[in-house]
Image 1: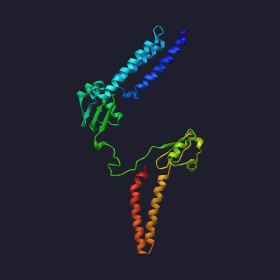
Image 2: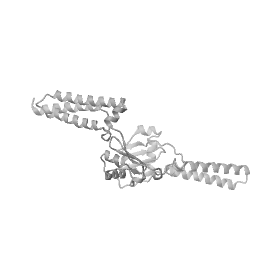
Image 3: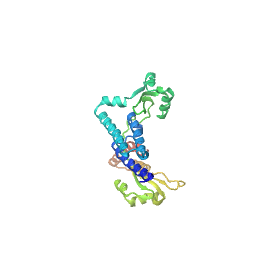
Image 4: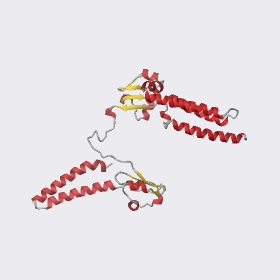
Length: 286
């Protein structure tokens, strides 16, 4: 067999074997790999190259070595799952770098981090002063996670005592100018509704690169032609305006009627509608 054909065959075999074995190792991201897993990844890559190019030695020896590395890695992963002591020994534990706004210099030296590197990592978390940090820890993966002090955290609806409704993920209903019927049906809509919404903003389906519908039935589109400006969806704003109009109408009916019972009924309905508007206004104005 010519050498170039043998290289092709060996390479294809290495690719297939490497794919099968790496599938066994799972889907952890590079940033989540332990030190041993990082070494294993480099080694099995080198072994795959050896199988492909080293024509002087038998190819199956490389596969045996590759299989041993993968089996050892799987064994270590199984041991980590079963034993916390093994996890702490192999992956180590997280190390606290900042506590109550104070940098722990000894822990910083232990992790071989400089103060400049720590400050850089804090900036990546949008924190520019160490004194604002309640707690910062470096994980076994090397990532630094930061908890900012309560007074420096942004306000949330829960802080203000506002209840918000859950919001489902937007559904992609148009992709590359093609209507996606399944996501559209999931939302309870059809092509007729979609075409009506597109007519409102004056675009055709074939000019839409991406179209998504949110929980409230608002259609957002991105066009192939970036020069065309598409108006923002107005469903929520329109609903809020209609509710306010209804409240104003009830107040007007209350003032215009001479029937005392009717006046009280209109006033009560107006107050109830006003409360409804206050409750849902945070949703309709976001």
